[in-house]
Length: 248
Image 1: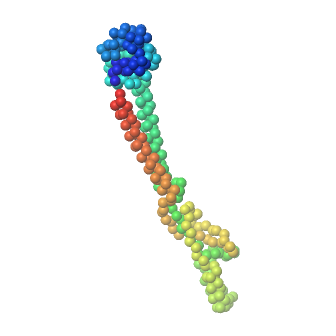
Image 2: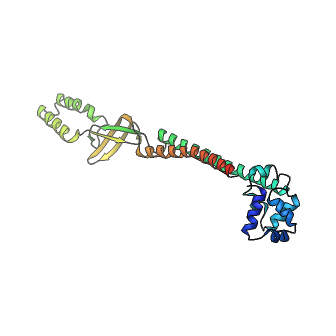
């Protein structure tokens, strides 16, 4: 709205006639009428007098005045210039906040998606280990690859008979050779040993499989959502700025 429309609207809101407000502001009623009909432009001193008589500051008065009027008709008034400068400063700060917020959302979102892809917080690999069976105390680590050879040598040396060899072989296969394969989300090296009843198990790494851990899947969704929020933030800031300029 124009200066005169704003002045008249505020005066009528206070329930004052032209003569009453003119007396309150200490100006002629005819001059007030010209101001309200935009037939005259207030000086700097007169603008401050009118605003003071309305019981408000320049910023409060100018909020509803068209930007074009502020930039042309009222630009000679220092308090109006100050209002414009303050408005521009606030707009710059407002835009910076949205830009920094959007940039932070992009960085955080991208970092979360990268962490999910690289398995930083949750492993994306399954490590498969195999154990051929239980190794008893005092036995060598390679017992499962050499036990037949050892029994054969004992039989050749006549330490055991053929029947004893067959019996010990059957016992070994029935009680000792119990293969086990396990998978772990974290690496335990190429070989690790785990104590069990009556001995220990020696596990060797036989392969790895790439998987997507549930935690990483959630991180990817959250990261993508936050990343998208950065673009939404820019769009909202642009729309708010356009709407604010249209309302002026």
